[in-house]
Length: 158
Image (cartoon, rainbow, N blue to C red; front, side, top):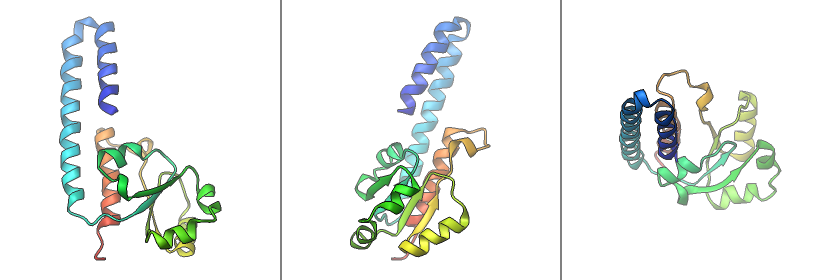
């Protein structure tokens, strides 16, 4: 999806600013190449770890789950912490599916994280948001940080 967005932006800018048409195509091509390299590198890193079932809360994990072939491990998604807490089937589901990892893309206080971890016997992994990233690498660095969070969860000796 991100590649298509880059191409749309490239085409729009090169139509508007014909003087720099070639620059837009070169820069977009380089960025798409870097995205491919990043995807391959992060996929290889993920292959080194034992993946296990997980749940997500908040945000949109579709791209990460699809791009890095994690669909079979992604058991449920909740839009809010409240919907997670209010799911009466959750305790049994966590137990029967042996889910220990929950990734959350919403702001949550440390004491709330500890309370949820204790109550459900899970580990909550806050996923960094793109808005919070201060690096000049933008999406590339952001995706790397997300995958590092998944690797942190999957790096176990179960």
